[in-house]
Image 1 (spheres, rainbow, N blue to C red):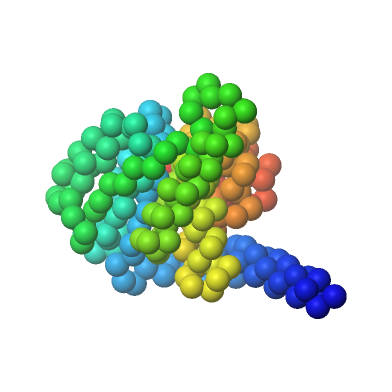
Image 2: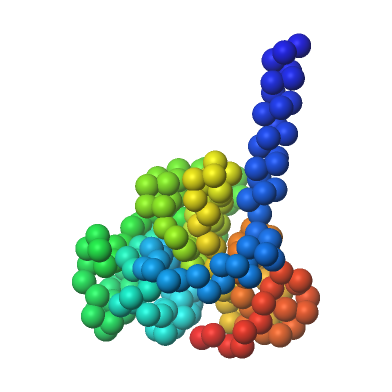
Amino acid sequence: MYSYLFALLAIIILVFRIVQALPTKKFKRNNSNKLEKPCKSCIVLGSGGHTMEMLQLLQGLDYATKYRPRLYIVSSNDTLSVKKARDLETAKGGTEGEDKYRIVRIPRARHVGESWLTTPFSVAKALIASTKVVLWETPDLIICNGPGICVPICVISYIHRILGIKRIYLIYVESFARVKSLSLSGRLLIRFVDTFLVQWPYLEGKYSQAEYKGVLV
């Protein structure tokens, strides 16, 4: 009897903490401009178009004083994104190291064309790798724009919130290519990230959580 009551109480507390961890308008308003000190930033790079758009977004960031150190997360076999990230850092005068930037590779959550039968195993591997990275690094900010690997990373960041350790601010920027509908990653994360940006006004009208700030790439 007592074990059932204890289990029920634990479930109630967990649900309460999860609801409390979800983004609110008040939290967004109070934290949207709070970058008064260096902000440890985690940047999730996909491949191909995702990486190209993300690097264009990063061009205008203040690497020298605000967004540092930086942690780039890429898929384990994505050598092109690694090269592009290093090229951007070189152009901005960054040097690879603990106090400037690092690049970490994790397994893909789902490979292109992968069977849905094997996808759960790929997702599990990605979740384990994401857990190690996010819990160890504890960034202040995570920026992503739709690649599959961003989903487990954002999910794992909620462990900090639920446990009351730290509230990692999550920013999701939907791809410019998404004109009328959201990507799968966007549909999964729109209710969980703190800021969800779209690049077409139609999407802002369609999804109440979306914000349109103009074309960003």
